[in-house]
Length: 507
Image (cartoon, rainbow, N blue to C red):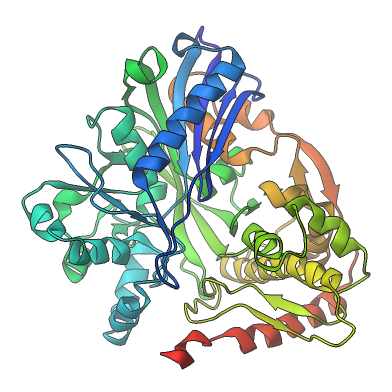
C-alpha cells in the first residue's frame, strides 16, 4: 500500500463534513458546511437531498485541498451518515422525488400507533430489534410512497430507489452504478431482519413496500464501487460504510463485548458491544447491528457484531435552543462557563423532549418541559439544567444496558462536539458512577468510517493496528456516592413524567 490517505465523508444532520486521515490516524485536512433544515409543519423535519450531496462533495474537495492531496494519494473513501433519514429518487435520472424525511421527523407517529394497536410491534421488534417508532425509516418510506404524487405507481414499475443517506451518496459518487447499503444502516430501517441478514418480506408486505426499491446490503468494510473520476480528478474506491453511531463505536475501538461509547452531537447515542449474537432488550433499548466485517462463509453482509443502543433525541440541539430559541447565550461554547457560575440547578430540570422522547420511554407525544422554576431561577440555572439533562438521560440508558447485558461497564468512551465540555463530562461521570474517557482524537465518527475503508483495502493491517492508535486524552472520575446518584435520577424521573404525553392532549 503506497497511498497515503483515507478520505472519510461524515454526512450529519446539520452539516456535511469530510476528513482526510493519514496512516497514523491523524486528521490532515478537514472541510465542513452547514445546510438548510426545513420544518414545513410542527413535528416535520426535512432536508433537500441535492443539497446534502452538493455540500458533501464540496467539503470532500475542500478536505483534499487542505491536506494537499489528490485522488491518486487516497487509498479509499469511507462513508458515515445520519441514520434513518429517508430518501427516494428516480432510478433513471437520479432526481429526488421529494425532500428527505429526517430521522427527527414525527409525521408517521399515527401510523406507528395504528400498527401497535394491531399488535404488529412484537413482530417488528423480534425481527428488527427495534422499537416501533416514527424514528425509523420504514414508516417514513411508506409515507413517501403514499403521499408523493405518482411515487407508488413508479415504485411498482421498478423506477424508484430508496436509500438512507449513505446509499444516496454512494449512488451519486458512482453515477448511479451502485445501489447499496451496509448492515448497520439496513438495521435502522425497520425493514431488515437482523437475524436472517435480509430484508423481511413479511414487514415489507405489512407496510406495502416493494422489495424492488431497496438497496443491496454489503459488508461495512468492503470495496463496493468507485467514485467517478470527475468528482476528485481520478477514481477512488468506496470501501467502508457505517451509520454515524456505529462508526463512532468502531472509531472508539470498542471491539470487545462490554465496551461502550456515547456520542454527544445533535442527539446523544450510547452503544454497547454485546458480541456476535443480538441481545433482546427488556428495557426498551434497541438491539442493532454494529458492523459486518468480511469473513469466510459469513454471507454477503459479513460477520456481524451486535450492539445495544439507547438514543437521546436532543443533546447538543438543546444547547442550540438556549442560543437560538431563548437567546440565553450567543455561542454554544459559552454554555459551560454560564452553567459553572452556579453550584447546582437549584432543583430546576429541563426535559428536552422537543421531538418526543427516545429510550427508554419512546413517547412521540412528549414535549419539552422546564420544571422547578422559582423567582430565584436565573439563566445560569437553566443552562446548568440543560447540561445536566444530557447527562441524566445518558445515565438512564446505561442503567438499562447494564440490566439487559448483565455487564457492568467499567468506563464510558465519549466523543462528539459536546464531549469537549469538561463540566458536562464531569456531570456524566458523577451520574454514571464510572470513569468517562475522552480520546485524543475526538473525530471518532469519521475515524470509524476511515477505519472500515482502510481495513478493506489493506491501509491498516487489522483491528489490532487500528485499535492501537486510540489514545485517551482525559479521564473524568466520578465524585458522587451511590445514594446521591440514585436520588438525582429519581428526581429526574419525576420531571420526565410531567413531559410525557403532552402533545396527545391537543389532538
